[in-house]
Image (tube, rainbow, N blue to C red):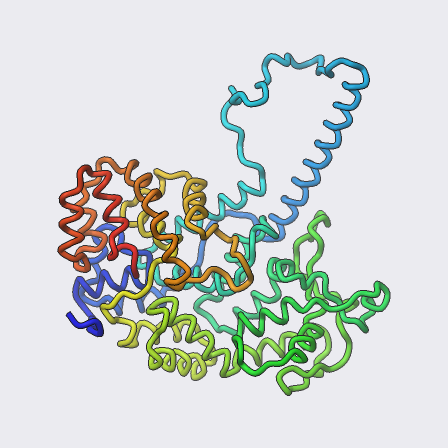
Length: 483
């Protein structure tokens, strides 16, 4: 079979579609879409609910206020405990609550007889968001729209290491509503979201000649402006200068938030004109004379429609889904689709599916740790067997802790970045297989990689020493590891 062979229909094309554009198949899904895999992917894009997540979880502002209150209460408790310890040391006696029998309390290091202690609030917020995210991936009929959410969330990443309560809500509020809409609207939503403004330090930025800048003797922080140009829109070596970064940073002054300590509106976005650098600014040889927040909106609108942005995003999409070095013809098709449709991301996604270059049988992409884990959970319908904390720990052990990217450019999805971590997946696969003692390995092989499986993989799984080993070997097979 030639490496450049392409498929368009049948079980092999269906399996390829589900692994390349989704999270792998659920049981019976290969057969369900085999007659028209492309049509099934395109139909998912047309669903009104595609990419959305209906869950009763706190908004980003609510979460920010809750975390602030939790941390304030913790600090107060620690201070009270420290005072009590000092008083006890001074008096030479332990303080006791007359209304409570101390023998009922667990000693340090002993388990709590009243049950496991719930995780701290910030961690619980993260666990709830992660459970909803993996649940959506497991339950998706195809998974393409959800994969697009994960792609754009990594492209516009923020970090829980800096703003733990807002990371999940940020994805729900800024990414999901626009993932199949206009890129210009997605860009506006992302760059004005408090999670992004805090992550890239724009809440600290003020125009040197603004009222606040003059009064406080403070000035610009260029992080948001630089990353918007370099990572989010134009890309590196696209022609912008340091002067463009500085002027754009001035444009974005005043885009900030209400600190979460404010009890009613803390965590909400606000444009503070006292922080905003007055006057027109020139970015990419165009002068923007708009006043206030409209100036930033105008710059972002032009960046969203810039030819360099179309090329940059086309390259990233093709690289993420098809190959680390994608066919130039595919990149050109996506770039042209982006420009011709005025950044219609649904149309761009459809172009990716309709392009013959996307259907090569040569599988060049390693699944990222999160996608690989989701594939395991999905094909075995086993998410309920694993507490979400264990899933998150597994993802972190594989070098991709959820919503904790190492830098503003997110996690790399290239083979060079992922290949060294593949051996570590074996431990996860073994632990996973231990919970699935009743699974029939050959049936699982057929429902997960069936028409893609080589004779060597079939033979390896069939002759494993145990069911557990067979499932682990299937999870580590080249056909399951790759998309």
